[in-house]
Length: 379
Ligand code: UDP
Image 1 (cartoon, protein in one colour):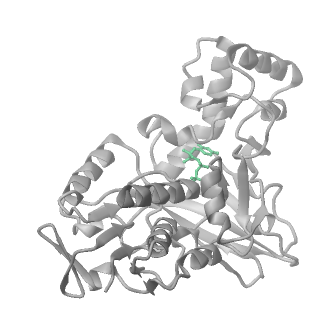
Image 2 (image 1 turned 135 degrees about the vertical axis):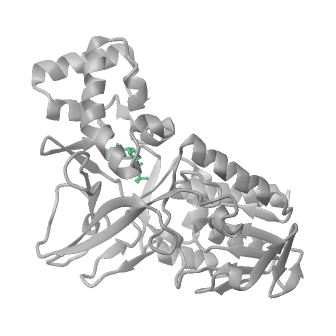
């Protein structure tokens, strides 16, 4: 009946469903939640503001192919994300850049540090903090220590419960020190939010006559794996299965639990038109939460109130909260590899997406990867 079985209706699963459906295959998409769009899910709240239920999602990509693909399913609202970090009680532009330098240091010192940066690095360069820390130049040493202490160390400790050195350098490199004056959080060519939200965008991707969507269904209710074979509704399934969930769950945690980091999302209504100076304000040092996002500043709404979201990082506990971030330690990677080699015993199953591939995919990465997987499977 079905040619392709897809577990999970986030970006990865939905894009693969659409690609296969458009090539004439019959698809069954099975989603545990009552709604599609995975952690990009958004909805209008009681204040009339479009909020991102699982934390702020800002679309950005440098890849025109991905941009064009998604543009078939949504009109966009051009949007450049801006983040301020609270440093010594003052909101300053993040990523730390030449403007930030002038906000946190007196002019003489800022001039000196800017000169040192420009002497050592090309204008426009992005320097990961852990790389800047290795600098031999005394002035850059001073700057690196300052930025490390004020922006990275305590935020990362809160976010991951690990110091920056204990996780993959690629994680903190996402927010580099920027030798330039661009205050935008991302520099990609294409930056926007879907005009009617991510949920609508994903619904549109899935809206295809060849796609059957089963919500509110754990895949284990309809599918089992045994000795390299897939059983769907009790019968041997010979089609392709795409799995976008956690591999440890797929294999009943036989090697133990794969660690993920979770976040407690606390939404609050503020009885004022405006709450903070930027769409997101990071709190690298103060308070238990890492950041506050004010959604009205992302999706403008005419209301006298405003909705904010505080993010409190915590350990992921199955059944209690949501897995958001794979944890990039050597141990976690090794455990993932064990599950992955278990998966390779099933020739018809492909892992796709942030959870299943245990990767720090942004939305555009997830879409790009799904398109790549489709090409590889249909070559
Ligand atoms: N980070 C930090 N301080 C900040 C912002 C980011 O130390 O003010 C580090 C932290 O380790 C974080 C990583 O950089 O997990 C990536 O940040 P990003 O904003 O990309 O995280 P996401 O939006 O994916 O949660």
